[in-house]
Image 1 (cartoon, rainbow, N blue to C red):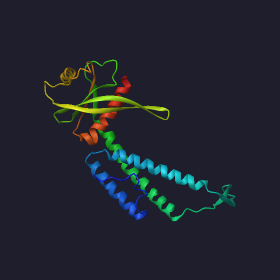
Image 2: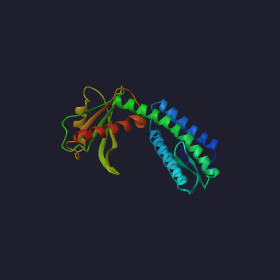
Image 3: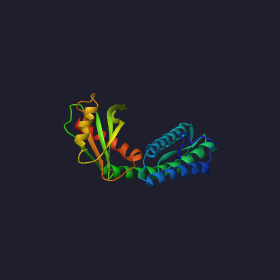
Image 4: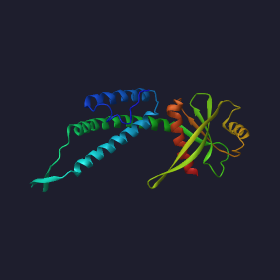
Length: 238
């Protein structure tokens, strides 16, 4: 898997054409994976790289605006003062600006593509509770079914809450337990009963079935989206 270093913008030599080559090679790998409906880890990487570029762009603009200026003239039509910078960006900063200005729209194209795939997959998921729910649904089991695939994948989940600025977010950590071949015997209800018998620490677990209408790559797409969808679902009933 071809990845893009978090320091790709400034590592090795800073040259516009070289950086374009590095970026486009990486984005081609992203495109190849998106074509196969494989979102992760590339979608998360795209988001992080994009945020880094926007931060770097903001910081360089802020730095440039902080340098001293002197009054040059007065625009009578727009009724504003015109200042002349006493500092000009050197060649290195100018090249970085050019690379950033080229790269940000490129990332936005693939971020939009990734979001379309994410939204499409999410709409194909259906979540139902299995049996009665306990008072606490912050931990339990997720029964994941992948379209026409006959295996039901069982994950134990735990909800975690983390704060960012003034907001709280919920996320789910999952651990793969086992799988069952779907049949008239291995219904979701019977799978839950079997899990209760085998794991005494969860005598009355919250259990949810997450079913996809179509077969989707599990590790790269289905599981990450199912986890986020389940986190949102549990939050509405907690």
